Image (tube, rainbow, N blue to C red; front, top):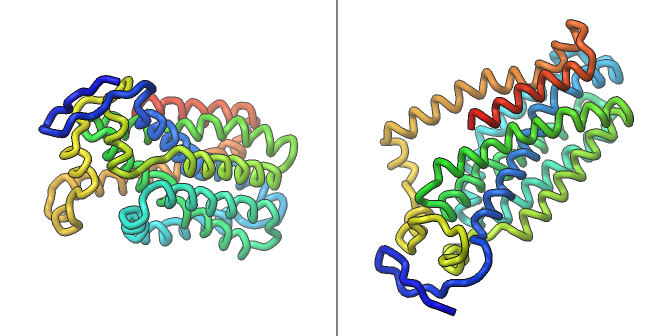
Length: 292
């Protein structure tokens, strides 16, 4: 086994066979984003009409669950702190399992208050299942190409929608909304296990991968350490980039969440068939992938 000296004054690192594990990390993060955000947001609208018919709930009552999501996501900084303390692996796996539990419970609900409680459980798992741990992982494994890789990972959101729309439409039409909720929970349990098995989030684990095939440029001890430490909260607040990115992400979320969660029910109201609705939402999700 040959030795290769990394750039930046790092000690010699033994080259190994196999593919750089960061690519597996990127794929797992892509799927976690798709399973948690993609299914939860794109799929929400597909359940509105079935729930109206089953329980005679108003659309306002159903959509109030989304307001609970806004309240819960205010706690995202606490989740970020948890990621810093315990790492992305455990937080991502546990959060996916929490979301899965919420969907399992939704499949057995009988009252509106249960829908709100179980939806809150799903929203609680959201920040820790997707963007927060994924962002840390991308920064650790791809420090010099993190922007490009985050584009790939966030495309999982729309990929999840692209898969969720036809899949859930089929399940709801054949097995009912309870079966669709339960099936979503099963999928998320599988993703939770995958995250626990394949995610590695320690700096020394990245260093072990240096020299493998498709190792991205710029992987050094200094780059890895910088990706872990980053900026303090106070330092971030004093940067222009923080406020521009934060404002942009907040504003686009108002439009995006409204569109992807309400479009399916609206298209039912105007008389489109399930096939036409599925095709319309799939086109939306597809171009969302392209835009990333």
